[in-house]
Length: 251
Image (tube, rainbow, N blue to C red; front, side, top):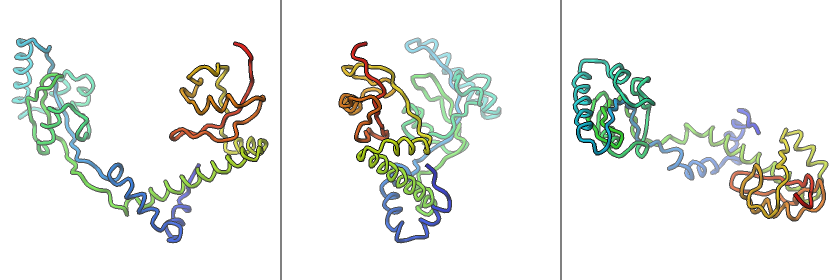
């Protein structure tokens, strides 16, 4: 399904169509979608040690302390590339990108969010080892204004309306048993049929679908080859049209 720019503009310029809908959608998702949490962008150097091995830990601490002293005069990225034991970030100069609270281990996170842009903090001990952390940038928590996301919300609402309208159309074909029209509609929208293959009704899993009591019940009620289940099956964000392809009395 597609929503054109023209449709969006028409919707926004028609108060009788959009009045209250955009504001309601914005309010509904304000905390989850339109509130940006505090973030920091950091790079780090990690020196590992084996837990419980005091000698190894002391060597790691000495190494990370030495690297911190060197970082005052040398390029942090090069130090990370040549010394960090975090294989996932060392080739990027230890760059971890932006992250928000809850994405890193607590000790690392606490140190990073307390630091200022450009500051190098550490050694910070975590269950991974000892870290040096350099803060590259910060983004304070903020709310995205409604005006900036009006078009995005309008597009989302229009798309939802189109999908729901199409679903009602399909449900009408099923209710009236207009199977030829249904087949034509599916071809027009290029919605392919996917076969599950043979399976026993006593099974809990439907091949290619998974555990679905609704689908199993719908298949159980179908008796003739080519017959469609009389209702569209809704499960979370997924919709199923069920047709009986074939029956075997034994497998």
